[in-house]
Length: 221
Image 1 (cartoon, rainbow, N blue to C red):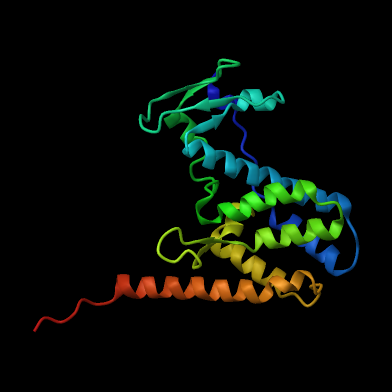
Image 2 (image 1 turned 30 degrees about the horizontal axis):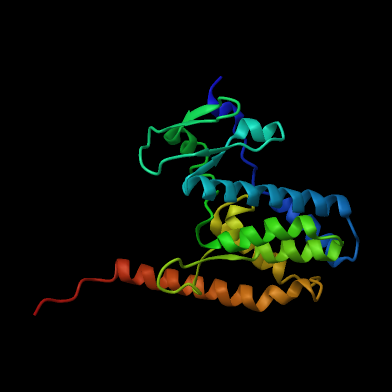
């Protein structure tokens, strides 16, 4: 059996599920089933993102053992692309190149939002009330990737695209509508100013980058 058959990365959450959750919250209707559906889906997604981050740093979690409720770690040498990953417990194996292909182009990189993903992965299982869970979800989907160089406090990309289905621009527009809806409850609306400021800063940076790329060359004297 090919090693890839054991790998199943969690999918991103649908916009419709997020929208229904916020609409029920705004209406004051408690839907515990929907809340857990969204919260646990985001939790599994964050855990997968963090597992890939760990693998990139040299420690791969065996997917076959994990599916059986066990944890086996594979230490790899950061170097050869054709390095064979082999589980010491169940003999699952796969090359590093093949393993990387399973998560490429799936929006599973932690990038500059690793801190937010780790905070949610640690905090959500500890949340006991619906209000605590909702606030954790709200903070997570409104998070950003921050610059890993030069300006660590500068937002470079919305992290929502790692968590919610759709293209980056579509998901940002979706959250704009979701965040600023007239029915938003006061506690959830607390993220509004930060979200707006970060989106504006991100769009400004994109605009400046485009100006640099497409600016005409200076005239020669």
